[in-house]
Image (tube, rainbow, N blue to C red; front, side, top):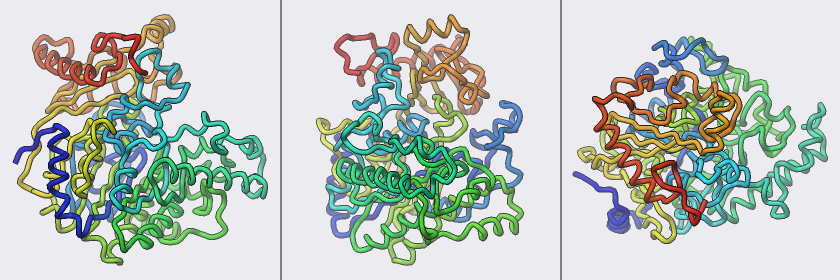
Length: 550
């Protein structure tokens, strides 16, 4: 069975499926980890996939870092492993833009982030006339995305955890922001227990909840982290060792499932973990330390941290992988709740990551992430698929599976296509189509075993690069780009061509090899067509136009 990509086919498929799902629409649970690499999940062979551990084993990168090291054992992740054994593993799933903000945008909207129309003032200044997907992108009030679509279809919608798609600090008078005056008061010791500071934190936190309920389609917003924890103006004592309280996030996710057991729900669970955390250092913070302040009691629902340490020790698992088991405990609690309530058979569960830490903030294979989907009784036999799909395909796929009509083109343009047939029919396949990637001033296309990357710095940034001899980050910031460029010898090359089957670490740039000239020109042509469809300036691919809306 073949399926083509045009939106009209997705609409037809969605309408055709609607009657079958009308009586009992499936629930949807999306669990989005943060910076979660292949080698941080026990199920995946770390040497098969691009990640820090396999890159070090291949001699591509140097000595062990202090966060993402070479683990001595595979992580203890029994619940994620079981999910993979029961569902479908997509081995070629790529995040469209591998950074927290644009990756979430693509997953929720089905759009390439460069299509976004809401950018911070800092991002617009950085762009210099050429859109640079990265920090500063946010969702507009009422903009179409999955939560809006599911709520309109009668679902209960919930957000638990990290959002990172709101431009709070440029909204004076609209609400009290996390960047409020208490940020200066929290430097002193004891600020986390200060009643005045606690009240200001709570006021700011509740304003965020109201804002997302009113503008982003969520009925329930709990255990909210509006962005990365260090951006929230919180006392350091609440976050300095741990990006989030997974126990708090899991507790509220469990409450949401329990309270919505009688009606279809869409639940977006997004912990700020691991996000640079490794080992057991996160335990220096209490489960009570949250973005809403210090809780009076421990959250419920997850195994205690003493149990976590004990299991790691008794299993002989490398303690550096403890964060992976912590995340696994969180997902396991949610899966167990679905079983307990008899909801597992009618719940689509998606587990993935916003990107890897390896290759983050580039167009390299840090965009390739773990992606597991389970729909008990509907997905057929467990299997691993090599079909190339990406973040922009998630939204149309979930709509398709739930019998919800995609948005009309005038409401929202979807760059993705539904891969629902791969889920419901084990014998089906997708018509091959390119996957497009973008970050900062980089654009890329992946087709089959080949990837082409185009890096086009605006003239002013290129001039500064030449004057200083320093390569900026892909989104134009000058400073230390060592983290992003580490292990990628062609990081600053304008044109890059890789055979991913032979060179998964993207070491051998074949763009100048005449033997591959036809492949290069073919991919350049397809990338150009997509960029011209979007219509925003990008080097010689799309000429600058004074009327272009940036």
